[in-house]
Length: 156
Image 1 (spheres, rainbow, N blue to C red):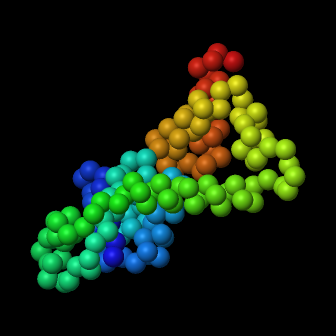
Image 2: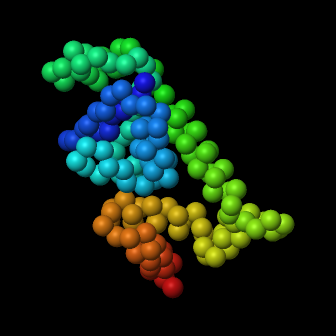
């Protein structure tokens, strides 16, 4: 069984006794740095902290009166990093599998890199920062904001 906690001050939420499939519904988007909806909130991987514990099923009396997370911590192992790494690796493998045409000389990412300008790492960093600070923007709007910000910094 899996237990998860999402924390972003002053909010936090916990979910207990999750199956692997239920956990994947949160872990997949989180690994792709997408918002996830748990409880009545949307959580951003850029702002919130995710903790995943693996351990025995917790009974109702162990969850009563807000004691569930402490009970889970005492009886479970923190597997957050391992599961996130696996999810990112699986997502990367799935993306790479169909990304380039058979026989193409370079994978999709290598073909895309020159299109991102002289400093693709700076653009990616600016894009992530724009998305984090302005979550209401669409991905393309965040990218446009990042590009214009970098252009204004370069003086071009």
